[in-house]
Image (cartoon, one colour):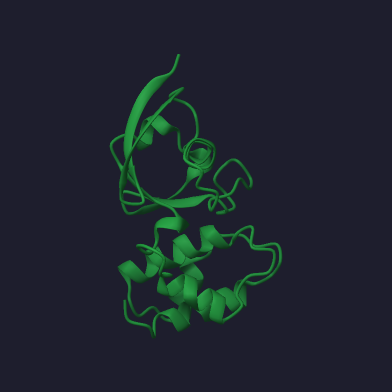
Length: 155
């Protein structure tokens, strides 16, 4: 049986009708057309689907929509308002910190969360913040360099 759920996604109100156990990732991608978060492992371990839910980084593949109801979700598409890039997104472009790009949206969500909580992290703090994000292409060093570069940009 479907139910109606209301939440805020990237600053706007959203109303979806779906089964309560439908994953937040499915709602974001299939109902709302937000393709940034990606399905990776399906059990919340790889980070490809990470989004911020009420200020906490969570795996959207492992988050049922009922638990997101009434809350605020920020995806990689919502990190920066309008057409401008978030400083983390710009730094990833500048540092060429992506290869296939599959995991990058989750990594950028984790990095933006880190910089919101700690505007001047050292390399160790960045590595710890990105520890839950897996990348099979091996861009981890470039991702850390990009996050550190983003700390030098105000905003």
